Length: 382
Ligand SMILES: [Zn+2]
Image 1: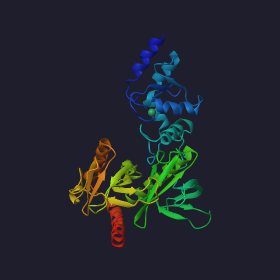
Image 2: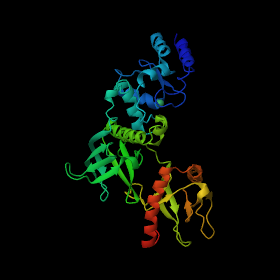
Image 3: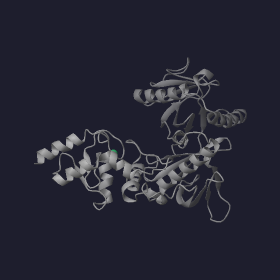
Image 4: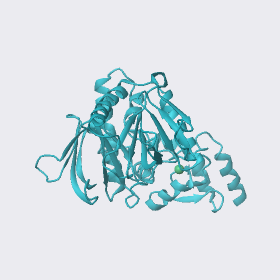
């Protein structure tokens, strides 16, 4: 009997839709939620278990014993049918997680689907209205201590504000259309439910770091920013396709990590810097959690004189895993931590250099160039 059920389950696994996890699309799911009727991966099965058996009953496909009725349920539902039910009304601004995405995003997606049933009852989606407010713990720029700050998102005004003292003037006003937001659980390792918000202020990038104890709250903030961005894009580009616009809401850093970098003079030694590639903007910092980058390099298209290659420019000592980033102004000699690290940096930078430059990219570049020119005329290069 048990053998028969195991065989039936492995047959069902080959059905279209069942070959990937119902929640994160990773390949070869090994578990199932047998009351919901879906095939899921090990990671998502942990989230299902944490919701409790009144929401989801989890079994391993091979290591657990299956009743006939349970196998029957799996046959009756399956991933495709379950998706139609539980993902019926996912708003277009919602970021549907993939297998390597941060835990908080996957966890809240699963809870939103099966526990809160947000995508069956859209009135439960508190983040789509264009207005969102609440308290988040924000890291202080000077002392790095976290303090509770009120944040208010207003799509109509294109602003995200935060207040040190409620009802007084905001401490900062960010343009929703000009900011980027990413999950930051690795950088802020003590706070798994954390975000890094990046925006331009007076020609330079500013990073702020926030967290909340509730994963649901931080995810709702993330989605609220995305929804407001999408609505504003829809107003600006009324004929554009909605799902196409949804690709331009937020963008994770393509790569982040330590690199060694030389100054502009041949005798300048290599200095360790934290690099982050945000779309076409390569920023470097003393510390990963700095509020401002020390420098920012706009990376344009290859036809405009941008290039990347292995090695160092003549006269510069090779650090072992060196590569050169060429811009119309300057050659940057950089060095990675390992061969693999270097190859991965070259790969992501190559992709940027080959990608056509958009109007939005040019707007960012203009604001950065202005700052660089000022800095060069006032200070010695950093
Ligand atoms: Zn999964």
